[in-house]
Picture 1 (cartoon, helix red, strand yellow):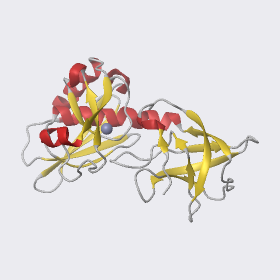
Picture 2 (cartoon, rainbow, N blue to C red):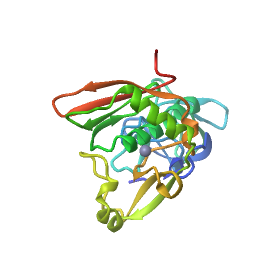
Picture 3 (cartoon, rainbow, N blue to C red):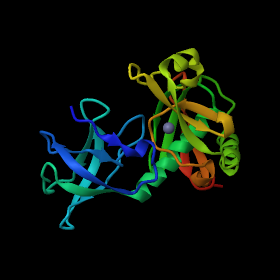
Picture 4 (tube, protein in one colour):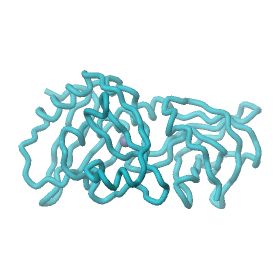
Length: 245
Ligand SMILES: [Zn+2]
């Protein structure tokens, strides 16, 4: 098993990094000693981008996924790309415009889960449209009210930061976990909490994704729709821009 140093975890704003090729898997996936490419997980899609070789040519990366364990990060090349040598040095570059939108959207999803404190049954982050499904049979929420509450939290420009806690601390604070179906990883000793607001005043929850540094950076978002999904679920959709008139 090859372990990739996940630089995106502490340095979400890195756009390029120098790295070495340490493995090629049987399907042509490229493994680096360290990377800024986020691998698809927790509802956030993996990064796309390229690996630039020393001669200046590029290997286009169409997707990033985890391998046999979450520590193994596989850069999946686009079709018809050259295969690098083991030990080769490359400059890894992510599609930053796409990733920054995903960071803004992902952080907006945290804000929505803070204003709508119900168990989450599913979530998906997208560049233009994200969704959270809440275990919620009856609701007074309207898209106008939810949009207004999100806007307040964005405009307050709260800091977003991470904090590591022990599994024991998490076990003593079960309310930190908002997802009904997905449990944070256990057996690794510590859990990464994503906190919003001074002293986590707005929200804190376990998450391994990438987020913006302040809520103001999310920019204008609105709730596009609140759909009924089955008897006990409501799906909230988040989109960029103002609420359409
Ligand atoms: Zn997150």
